[in-house]
Length: 263
Image 1 (cartoon, one colour):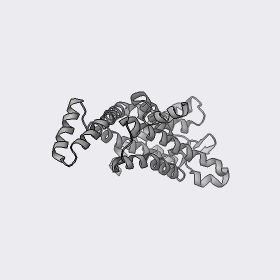
Image 2 (spheres, rainbow, N blue to C red):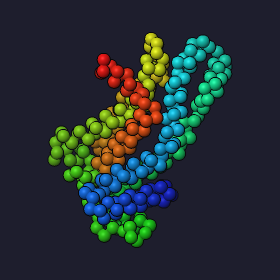
Image 3 (cartoon, rainbow, N blue to C red):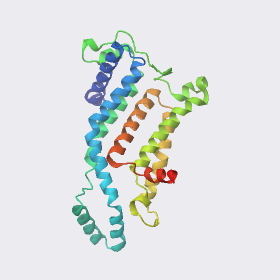
Image 4 (cartoon, rainbow, N blue to C red):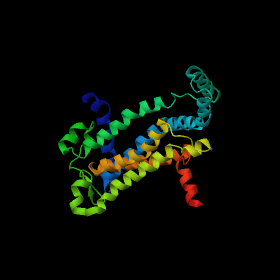
């Protein structure tokens, strides 16, 4: 963990402190909260090429789903022939099934480093922050104000529920909603992919459907017990992901919903 801090967490904290010092110098209100937003967007921009590559590979794989379904039906019971025909199909369409793995492997340590940095930063004392920064001009003379729009970034919704009441639950609900939108966009519905009568759902598609709904609920539940600083980071990260998903692959699974509403 010490090596992880030295390689990823501490450099990210230094970038955050640098952004904070700049915003504080400009007398920007809620400088720490906006520093978290700027840092999250900056990391997203750095990871943009890798995420874009992953999304394009995923889109190509989803476009091949109808052809894969036909191959599975045609060569049912013949695993060897099915494997050969599947690889031939990938080759014909220039698809590499492993193309989306490398970008994910590259992104995960950075994303985890950002998450770990924000977990620490909302609890560090002034002396601890100054012991981490690399340059003397980055040292803080006073501990930053941890409030953002009137809410302490180090507290959790569960801790301030008695103070703010049920309205504070809107933050975990928003977190879950944004995560659901992104999850729904990533997975194309069977109707949109196959363009034919829906067949019996296999295990993979059932798991995909359940994940689309269960994962956002889990994220919303966890955000009720996580500091607001993490929710601010996560929501910024998700909003950027939604925009990137739309730019590269369109509405995805949301397209069917929007057509239904328009009709």
